[in-house]
Length: 405
Image (cartoon, rainbow, N blue to C red):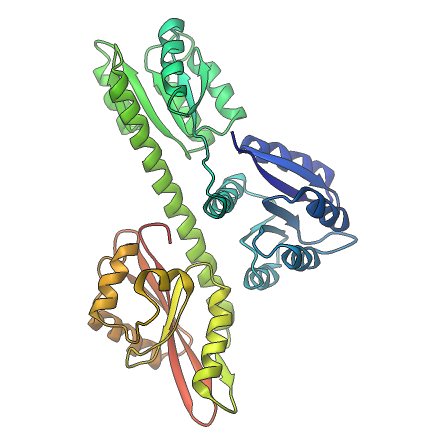
């Protein structure tokens, strides 16, 4: 099983040990450093995939740690811990390439999501396979062990529990992707244990087994969030198919949460940049060239697919993630480009709708408009203004599609 390596830099020993324990539960190998200089030495030696660092430390602050690590390895994903009142610094760090920031005291659900986003990026770069973890709960030992062997052959890691109470203890100690549980068990039944698990963490999918006469319990399990129920005796093919569907749903749900966080970070960056109501760039030579240079620097700091257009829909800049989908020769935002954007889940967008939104932005510079383009997809739209021999405005658009970018 692949264990990606995390370097945790935190000078508070109690906080560091608590965070390290949680990160290990999330299925990462953890290396700990109690200050920035030691952290950088360990980074050079251990070459971790992900770095978590506090902002304020006695010998070297987080920004220095970030710049040093990015100088050594630009691709390394960094998550920054900040105190109250350090939001502007955190957003500055985002613009320097930090993946995410978390405010203290650290919300563990938020940390889990940040680590998930980082792991997703590492897996994409290295083309790794992350082995899913299944918690199999059944008080009947022989059928449970038989099912565990079958599931393990599918390259899934299986952890067994013989009742609901043991299942809850295991769930609290390990990162579980799929819970498969019988409903009727001694000590604590499957419905009760699933309910307690969801109180602890909702980032998993559930499948339940039902015996004869358990139909009412199965229906209640579905109402409580279980993905499927399977009658005993268990049909192996049906079980494997159900697990595959559960893993796919979990992947999509996580991806949507990750994209939502990326969009939130993008909005924070745009809001900071437009805090003076207008982004004004003073130019002395070529307006278009320097505006494009500025747009590229700004857009590279925003972790989502983005492009810049003129009011007549002429395209000024498209970033790499969008270029791979619409092509590099697209010169104008038109119906053909909108059709191409459907490939990333932009489902419902018309030129008239976009025109009306842009007109409002030109009337109120500095505002930010959100265009819903599907159940989960949207465009974030704002205005930047360039001042040189003439004054010209451009529209910056950040895309949140309904699939991973």
